[in-house]
Length: 248
Ligand SMILES: Nc1ncnc2c1ncn2[C@@H]1O[C@H](COP(=O)(O)OP(=O)(O)OP(=O)(O)O)[C@@H](O)[C@H]1O
Ligand SMILES: C=C(C)CCOP(=O)(O)O
Image 1 (cartoon, rainbow, N blue to C red):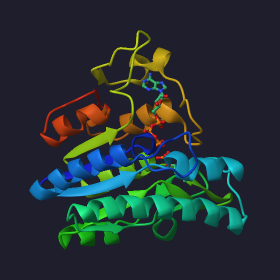
Image 2 (tube, rainbow, N blue to C red):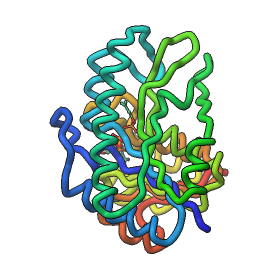
Image 3 (cartoon, helix red, strand yellow):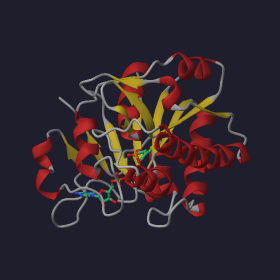
């Protein structure tokens, strides 16, 4: 059975500029897409932080590289992400998708050099038993740093390579990776293909926006599709909306 890893960007399922606000229409469209994928194969969902995780992370001075030993701050970030995760799980349950949470804080860790170790037993067993695991960007224990942010994009890379995903999709608010004229770049095989146009994120985003996304996906070794909400149904149908990123 084919396995799809789908990331729902925080900017798709939340209003990124209003603290802790779900974008109900964006979430509904995303949940419909997951329901269709789950009806025809295995799917692992990952969602980003949007206005839930990033504001708390910025308030506590935590990013992917800079950590904290303040447990109160770690819990504030994690609890916000659990609230968003609950909203995603609820939307999926309303569509009869057997979705279950996997919280990276309790599952994985980072070594001193920042590499992510994400044991996959819970996700794999859930899939084998017919569930749809739903992970999320989170705060995670990091050797020598206390705890740092792990982005949904990092999780997608670990999951897709560790589980041998057949297809990877990242739904963001932009229709793909854009060039300097604002047109979608159909294919990226090297960072230089898009470097001139790649910026961070327009909203509060402690994990780096589109440039970081492209770098991580190039390292994946499997094709990854970056598309906007309008590309969701085409991705579900097996087509190739937006930008495809192929690492060498
Ligand atoms: N060349 C580019 N093409 C497309 N988007 C770009 C580009 N350069 C910068 N961006 C920014 O990257 C953003 C998408 O990355 P971002 O990390 O915010 O997406 P996301 O995955 O949807 O959100 P989150 O990180 O909350 O999950 C766009 O909204 C845009 O502001
Ligand atoms: C800010 C937090 C906690 C999660 C970040 O995940 P991302 O939005 O996928 O980069």
